[in-house]
Length: 355
Ligand SMILES: [Zn+2]
Image (cartoon, rainbow, N blue to C red; front, side):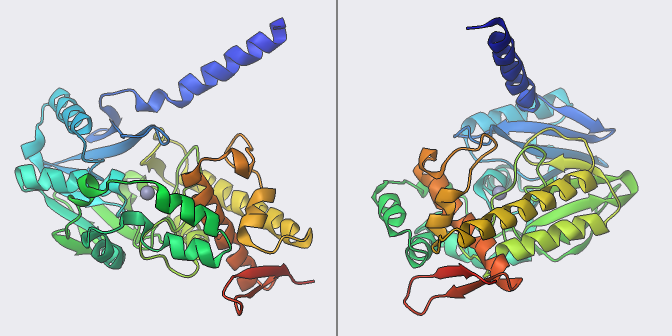
C-alpha cells in the first residue's frame, strides 16, 4: 500500500471515529439544565439514540425515551446518577414519534416510576395498528411493495422470521395525545411543532427563548431520515417532509438537538442541506425515468444509495425495501409537480416522464 493510500485510510478511520464520538456513553451538557444522553440500540445501523434530559424545577422532563432494552435502561440510570438524579425524578416524557427507538422505553419508564408519556396525536392510527400486536412497522409494506412491482422483495421479507413480541409489548397508548402548540413546563416553554414526513405524527419541540430545537428524527446532522416508514403511511410522505423542513426554516434558527448524531449546529443550515439533497434526488429520479425506467424498483436500481454511493444490489433486504419505498415517494412528488405521470390501472404502479 502506498504512503498516500495509507494516510487516506487513516484519515477515513479517524473520520469514522470522530463521526461516532457522539455515541460515547454518559451525559453531555448541551446548555445549563439540558443534557444529551446517547443510549444503545440492539442493531447498530443508527449507532445510538439520544434522549434529552431537561432539569425542570425539582423534576426531569425527557425528550424521547430510547429503545426498551436492558443495556439502555442501565445506561440511562447510570447517566442520570452522574447528574444527581434517578428514574423517579422523571415526571414527563415527550416522545417525538412512534418509532420503537424513541417510544418503547418511555412506556417502560412509565411502568417503573409512573412518568407521564406524551406522543403526537398524528401517531394515533399507527399506534392502533401496532397495538394489534400483529405486524409492527411493516404492516402495510408488503402489499405496497407488490403494487410497486417489487413482489420479490415482499416475498423475501415475508420469509424472514421476525419476533416482534418483545417490542410490541411496549406499545400502549400514551397518557397524552399531544396537539401541536405550547407545552408548559415549570421552568421551560416548549412549542410542539407538527413535522410530518419521517412519520405522519412526528413532532419537534422548539424552545424559542433558549434557541434550541429538539428535532427527533426530522432533522439529522449526518444522514437523511427515512420517509414514511410507519404502519399508517400517508399518500405523499415526501411532500409532507419537504413542507416540514420549510416549517423548520419558518422558525427562528436554533441549535440542532437531533435524536441520532451530535448536538449543535444550525437547524436552518441543515434543513437547507436536506432540501437540496432531495431536490438533487428528484432530478436524478426524473433522469432515471427519462432513461426508460418505469417501475419504482427499476428506478431504485439506477440510483446510488447511502453516503457511500452503493448500488441497490449491495443493500441488505431491509434497506432495499426502504430504497424502493423512498424511490416511490420521490416519484410521487414528481407526479405532483407535473414532471411525471403515474398509472396503476394494471394493478402495478408505473411511472413515465412528462416532456
Ligand atoms: Zn424514527
